[in-house]
Image (cartoon, rainbow, N blue to C red; front, top):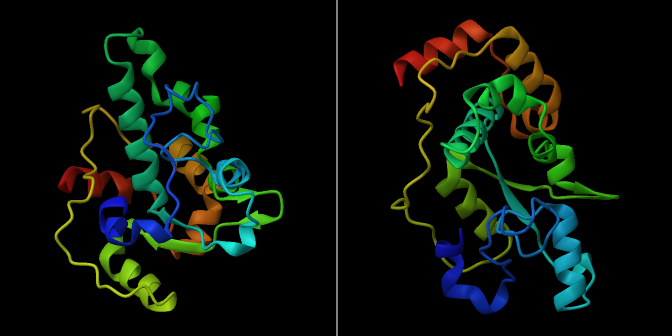
Length: 195
């Protein structure tokens, strides 16, 4: 989205491009590239003193099962060669503070504020074009940007009832606001085998 909106960058406030480890694991750090809603408030307080009402906030949303798998894959990638294999289990991942920090209510919500302009990753170009029309941003998004793929790093990964229940419960806001359908472990594993 930064690449898309570079052409009107004078009208947009962006956070830094620091990663989470550079921000000491604090998702509300306004210098974190994927800062949460609390980080938006802190950023505005530090840079403009402006009220949140003066700005339009938007974020991406994606299928909760794909989101969970992508986050777990990122966790594995960042921890290769650093931790024993048993510390990289999906069960340990589900119990991490940083995993919980990414739940929608911890990420898109802060106090009475909630980011409601949601761009579905699976529908990125169309949703961004609708967003542009809604806010009179005068250009069209082309379909030439590459999206992240969902390749499984752990070849033995399988969605279990425990994992699916965890996702269904903790990403309920994404299911509701994104209109995503809940699936069974069997359906999800069949999808994984097809990809």
